[in-house]
Image 1 (cartoon, rainbow, N blue to C red):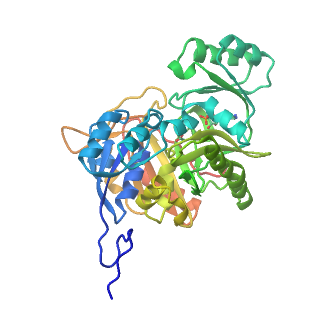
Image 2 (cartoon, rainbow, N blue to C red):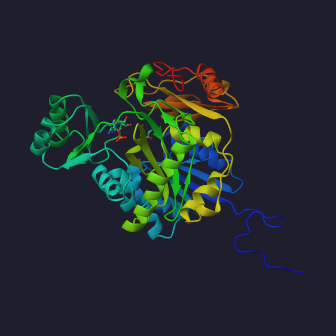
Length: 439
Ligand code: AMP
Ligand code: GLY
C-alpha cells in the first residue's frame, strides 16, 4: 500500500536529508566551535564563516565580510542559498541582523534588535528583571553624572558601576570607595571612554558568591536549559589581574546542585519566558545569563543574548545531539519537541592568549604544535590567520586558541586539555594554569 510521506520526513530510509548550507557570522573561538559541531551534522551542507579565522577555513569557506556588515551578509546569504545563519557576536544582533534576515524570509539563529536590548542596554535589562521578579542586584540608573556622583557619596561599598551600552566587556567597574566611583562615573559619562555606551549608567549593589554561566535556548514559547559552565574571567592565576573575555571554561561548573538548577529554572528562566511574552519581545536565540550564586539564591548579573565565548567551546564538546537540528528548531519555535543529549563527565577549555592581553599585544607570531593535538582534545581557533605567504598559522588577536578536552570527570578533562596545551607554542603565549583547579 502506498502511503504519503509526512511533510517533514527528513532522512528516512527512502529520502536522503536535504543539505542545509550554513552561514556563521563572527570570527572567534565561539564561531569555530559552532562551525565544528554543525559540520558534524548529517544534514550540514556547505559551511561559510564571515569573516572566520584559520580554524573555520579548514571546515568550510571563509567569506571576507565583516560581522557587522548586515547588507553584505544578507546579499551573500541570498546568493548562496543559505538555509540557516548563526550569529555569534552581540553587536551584530544589537544592530538588527536578525530583523534584516527575517524581513527577507531567511532563517537566522539569534534574537532581533528589540529582544537583544536585554544585552545591549543594561538599564533595559534591569528594568525587565525588576518588573518580572527576576532576582538581581538592587540598582539605580543615571543619565546625569553629577546626580550619579552625589548618590554614590552615601552608598555602601564595594559598588558596581556599569556603562549602559555594549563596551567590549570593559564597561563594568567595581568601585571600592566614593572616590573610585566618582572616577569611574567621570570616565564613563563625562570623558565618554566607551562612547555613547556610557551616556547612561547603572549603579548596582555588589553581590558576593560564585559566578556561573547559564545557557538556555529560547524560542519565544519554551526554553531548553544547557549544562552550566564556569568561566575564568581574570587574566592571571588565582583570579588576579584585569578582567578579560574569558581565559578558560569548565562544564559543568560544579556549583549547580539539583535544587539550585530548579531555582534557576523557576526564578530566572520561567520568569524570563513569561516576561518576554508579556512585553511582546520575540526572543528566539540563546539566552546566557551570567549568574551570581549568592547566599540568597542565584541572582542575574547580566543577560547575554548569544553564546558565551569560551563557554561554547566547552558546551559543544559535551553535546551528543545534532546542533544544526537544535538551532533550526529554536529559529522555528519548535524547541519543545527536542530533548538533546549531553555526554556524562566533563569538558574543559584552556585559552592560549597573546602576551599582554587584555591590554596591547603583538600579532603575526607563528604557532607551532597544532598538528600534535588529537582526539579527545580539539583546538578551536580564535585570533588566528593563515600566513598568506605559506602554510603557517599566525596569531591574529588577543585570545588565540581554545584547547578543549572531554573526560570522565573534570580532573581528567583538565589534565587532557593542559597536556594538549603544553604541545602548542608561539612567541609570548600567555595562559592560566588553574582553569578548573580546586579552589
Ligand atoms: P557584567 O558584564 O555585567 O557581567 O559584569 C562583568 C563582571 O563584573 C561579572 O562577570 C562579575 O564578575 C562582575 N560583576 C558585575 N556585576 C556585579 C555585581 N553586582 N556584583 C559583583 N560583581 C559583579
Ligand atoms: N565568557 C563570557 C562571555 O562570553 O561574555
